[in-house]
Length: 275
Image (cartoon, rainbow, N blue to C red):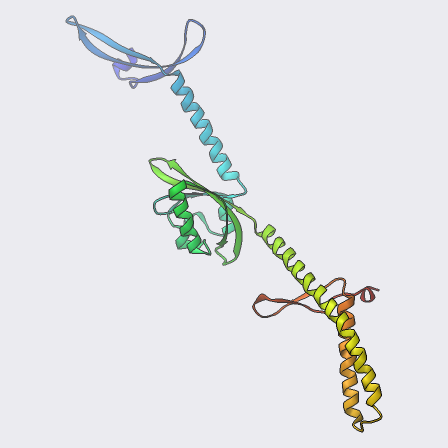
């Protein structure tokens, strides 16, 4: 108190004290000089600040944990303003995966960086956030600085950050899982196509045998032996293709126009080809 009156210590002053039960308490003290009954006096104010100090300590620990989780998370975490979408902070995972530097991101928006492949999806997400204040596991496509497209699960929630309404968003990269799923579906589709092709080849075998029979029947009646020979060669080629298709066990696909894939029987394997 004397130090505060002399100006050597600021007022109010927070310190620890032990009460008569031996418990540690936080006390906030404030003193000032006054005149009391025409005499100089000191007016002191003391308040038990223990609960509030414990709350402040808990808040500090919570903030420390948040910042550690924010920095070390393998998922991308960003904090941006809700009103205009400016990035306030991003974690290392975001920078490492997207290829941007912190200087290129902070103070800019995802729209400026062109991160959302589908801007309309982003607009719909903003509407949901304004109404419900959270979004969970939205599947989206994000564009990296290099132009590479990645599949992500995006979750976000509105928070109070300082004196402003902000958005904390967590993004999980599911590109590998998504591409594996697409490959599995493509294999199933090609397998279905192959099964249909095998059935078709089996059905065509009988008409092909009949064509062979007719060629043998008319070979002595037609003088143009060259045409008959060419016709027989084409039948042999058809039979060879049908046999390959029917015996395929491991197939490979070749990509054609617009990403469409077709089974390449020349690259595929049959039991005979493995021997």
